[in-house]
Length: 229
Image (cartoon, rainbow, N blue to C red):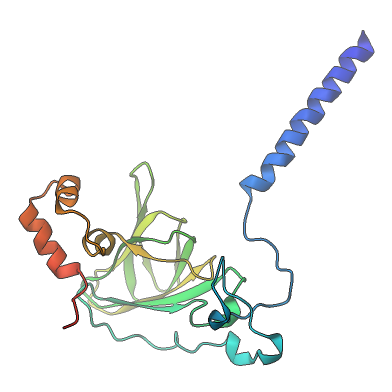
């Protein structure tokens, strides 16, 4: 009887242990480990599946891993008052398969805004180079997590959550943003809904935002890409 109970407990213990260890990899899943030292992107070689085909290693150079575009502030020439300079796999082919990228965001004084948006494939962490920003993200429970951050400070925006940054001060501001994806993707809420092509039906937008069709049209006229003549 004693041995039967002991064997039963041992069986239960190992069953639980197996279930736990089988679950952990799924919970901690991430990009697979590399099977080679590098895979410099070669977009012209073929259709990408999950990343780009690899450039012939004999043709790889240091320039495949270099980008100087974040050194200086970008010119801001849009209505929201911010400019994003990406340093992703499109700019640095050597990032292909490495799962990281950067960006610089510059903000105009007195209201420069990086409008509410999401990165579907990455968590973002920003480091303030200059100035002061009001930042925040919204959870799926509609809780706003917000803070004012200044030069030298860091803030994190979890993967896939809606977030924003705004410069309310009278001096320019800038950040360096890091992502755990070579191509994190960006979907701006306003641009996606009011500037989609084909356009989202006015009735959908009017119902969602509880506004009239005239207002929907006015917003679309400001956000929708201008057609070339």
